[in-house]
Length: 374
Image 1 (tube, rainbow, N blue to C red):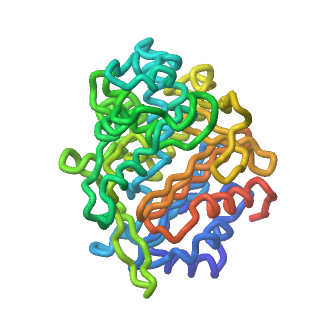
Image 2 (tube, rainbow, N blue to C red):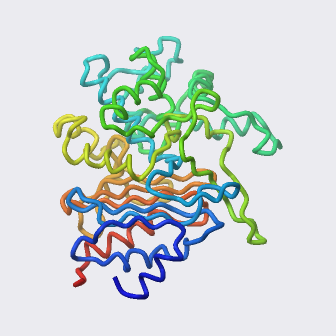
């Protein structure tokens, strides 16, 4: 370790890097995140896994502005939409159990659902081709002129109720691709209806406990507590940090309510790599890009999209990739997996002014684009 990196390591709030990969020095990775080092500001946790081994693991900044506890590998961040891969895995386990089928329709599971749900299958919810109305838009319309922090939080069951009050979808199921938080909140309710357990309990029993992800949970205020919790923050125009940890939709679990840490997510990555939770064949539907009937999947901005079940599948610079970002009030997260390169980069931030995906891809470039002698 050179003197410059030793100095940087000392001033970082939390340092817990493991030995390097033999190709990329820890100093080069650390330099990407050095601006986040602080003893009194929110920051991020970063993990690089190569060949199943952690080659970089480090925290920057603090969990919150009250305790100023340094971020480390056990700090639990709200994953936001990173959550969706766990929701999808829960559905896939129920399919493996024979209790559910990808071609079951909403009205098969919820007979009281309006007629427009007859054509919406479970797979449409998983791959964002359901056409369900956006519950967030509808919720905000119900409170015109009300400050966001005064709007009551909605739960997954409330999302389902909102959708049951609608008379039509946005487009015929399967015809188009449109990212849908409504779909994943509905999937959480399907897990509850089919399993007979709460969404959080089902994930704990079927995913988190078997994988020894002992500190990962679906957070429900008043029912459980997030250990070593990071709180979300935003920077005001005057440069002062403000805690922005919750929003009216923060209590919805299926689309973004899971908290986890680097240590636990390393176990999740290992399960994906070794197929210990779902076999390669059982995972295949999640890794098969959707093909809408009206043409290629595209984002709202018109960019081509490749999406399976809870995973984006767009390649990166010719490298096969499965990934997902999370973005919510005060948090930015990403997991970038390059299965053929045996590389995974995870960035979890409790501040809204960073682009977690962009940072993670800068790290990936170091490993995918060249080597450095140590």
